[in-house]
Length: 195
Image (cartoon, rainbow, N blue to C red; front, side, top):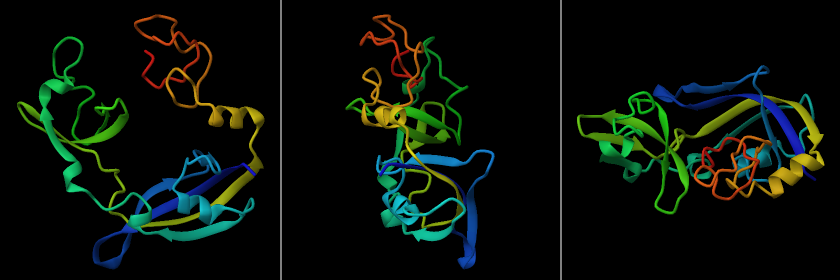
């Protein structure tokens, strides 16, 4: 059964002197919505909410090993600043800013997000760890809605767009231009890989 879950929550992490700190607040104005069993959420997050009904409250913890893993110091890299030049051959100081996430492409073509940690005259240090790596997570929240997924939603999740390999595509956002969109598709949801 593919339920679509909409919920709100406060996410706490371990803080100083044994006190928890609020890391994230998901509110009624911008709730979280996901479809079960499509790998959209941490497995233990989905498991904790499975079977809940509209109006149910929840309060559960996920240890860092079952969440985003321990913090990996090897995932902090110092790279040549030239890798962050824009199309004009200049450093992209509008996009590459300390504290901001930037998209990076791995050697096998995957797009990953990295936090910019430091910028010097000739180097940029990035952190590829998830921002929640090394954190024990404590979720406290409420289910706003549980409903069956529509056939359209399920189709989109089962068959991500051929052009970008991602879901969330909308008609007319890809260009049928060999340089911008070599696959020739005309539906893309702004993944950035089609132009």
